[in-house]
Length: 476
Ligand code: GLU
Image (cartoon, rainbow, N blue to C red; front, side, top):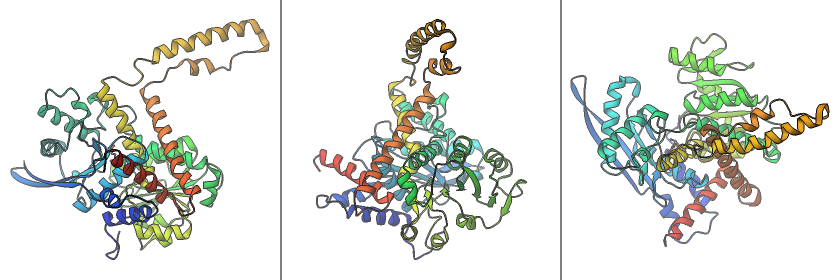
């Protein structure tokens, strides 16, 4: 955890922004305009629970409206405060610009420990919070579109969408007021896994560039790489699962609230996940060594470290002890500005948060477009695509008969080729394309400019240039 001589989270984001913006030649004053947070709203409201009125404090911060709607999650945690939502809103601006989702940046939070409440109580609280935000247009399909974040998920998003609809009964685009909804409430396939999937696609793209892999002091592909994951929540779980199941990586450490598990043979992600759900933590999990001081496992020898829990976990007190040559920031702001400097000097390569965890907002963008177009992706094309493929297969079958033993189709070619893409496949394809393109945009600057020696600075440069471009186009 951050020590008192470390800057706050928002200051940390500003320090990183300043380092990058100094390399750009922006018109006077524009730099300041981009950096500052446009507005932060604080709402306090009472809910009658268990026979008494309880007062809650929530925030929605709007960092930049160079594009609207503005976008960003709503977090439920006791750590929520103005500084935090402002830092997270700023990161949303840069993230959206980097991955080219047409949104400004925003973030919200409610100061609450959701584990302290029953489901029906959480529904009451969420609906009331949504009401407070919606009546100020801080939830609105064309102005401000929230999504899940720490402590929230599709259940909360469904309540928020329903609450907005009750307040705006004639808004035909009402479903687009929030993303991350369940499928039966207007959600999109692949949104829940999206941030973890994006982490996987980011790593796959990194490992496609052997020059970059070499800078991190690594070789080869993802297969066999030893990975330590901090936080087995939605993002950490999906990233760890996909990397092990599909890319041959080995998760040798999992850090959770109550301690960590280590195993050099590799941990079974689904088994650990199920254990945490049942027992509330990793303690007493039978098939691995338990380490009570979980944070110490961040310092374990490994190839890739994935902080996927919360901000500030790698700070000036532990940065020097981190041994991973490659860190991918699945959480927002897990490395403080001070730690970032220490790690850079050590030669550690950091794939920065605004890129690494952008899979969530990317698929949110697809969901928003789906809601506005009122049709599932692939519904018009899928069977037509299959019919055209059938024509080719018919011809190949004719050739197959004609050639006799000399030639035949590869056994599973027909089934694979005939199958038209469904919504999930289209979402994954769009996400993969987004993650590849954004990485290539960052790395072009990283390698082409002598004054850019890390991916974070490159990411900020790409993002700030785009935000500045849209302010200029508006005449600012
Ligand atoms: N809360 C996620 C983030 O930090 C997702 C935001 C969104 O989908 O709008 O990127």
